[in-house]
Length: 489
Image (cartoon, rainbow, N blue to C red; front, side, top):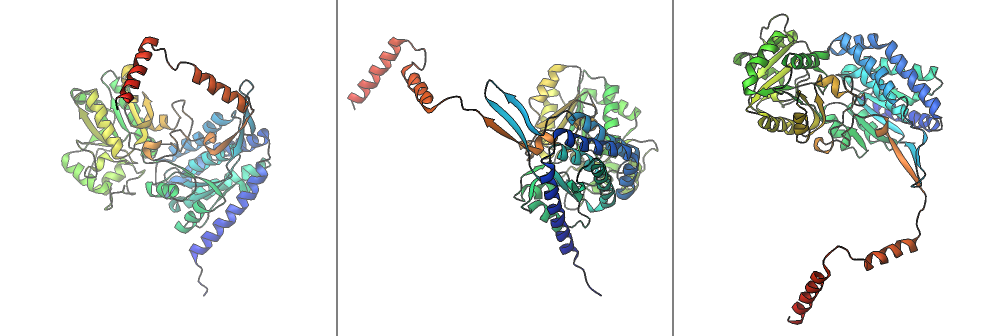
């Protein structure tokens, strides 16, 4: 019996996919804006048509989330993303300033490596395929092994749409033998121009250390402040709608709720009325041991699971109609599991003396985990928005909206995106919701406006002119003092 080396096969496949993608992209780079837009629209339309089927496949294969919500995410990643980018100029000259003599020309980066997570597998493929091709690129996907089937099926849908629209289906492809060696080969290959990384922290760090330019995102761990002027009932509704959407698998979802101490009774009562269950100290202790693995990372057994499934696995009993499990917390750090990111319907609950202390605490949470990502506030006082927006270390401040859906641009006017940049504070190359504009270079054609002699004349004139409006008598006195100083030395 002949033994087959899976690792070598995966590396060879990856190299072949990259070569095919490079050839397809070089041809694609000569297409007109109209031709590019026709292909991108075909992908979006195919994503909408297959949204329900692909969402069901993702849930069945991974066990994460809720099928109906995955369908919504697939439609969002197809239709909403397309609507946001359809009118963007991304081919050839995209702007011209006659007065300054400047022209801007869009230049594709080339072949992109797209890392796909298991939490949002099908929607991320649809989104990344659209923004990559809109910018004139090809993309090769590295799928999370636990979501390989649904990712491959989504890529098949995308490739068929491209072909039917008159494009080369090799513009989008996927590794079928996912191994660490294949992903490493993909990220470090000389024909890969850029890595678009969405996944766990270890994968994102590997992307940034690969030597290839990368756009990656860190973990979300966003606190949500219910400020005293807020409509408490509406704020709680938005928070629970957000945290329960697809069982909390969107990284922009709220991870903790915080309010002023004197508001605790009213906020807790409203949360309980809307389906939150506050854990007893014993229940919190049991669940705390289940949230994290021994190495301190999130236990995949909680990711995207229902409240009932999590409670059962942790050995606790909760009311049947419970929507979210909430634990009172007073600390932040590795000894406080609820203070970390939890991609599940789990929330920490904090209180502080006043809004200044709340802000300090939110900063502490985010600098422990989630820096650069998302913070949300519920308030009727615009001064509070200004106060927090100037201080919290995030790229997105969500105001009076479900944070998960607002962060990705579904309930706000941010760029619809499933890759949310965290900026320098979060170790990311961008703080934007990533779209086509982050996946292309801008080449400038600049018309000369001055000669060398003009520059020299300007310098000479500036040297002859007084540098400031000082009193001449004061200037004379200063000069005299300097001369006397050196004469006495």
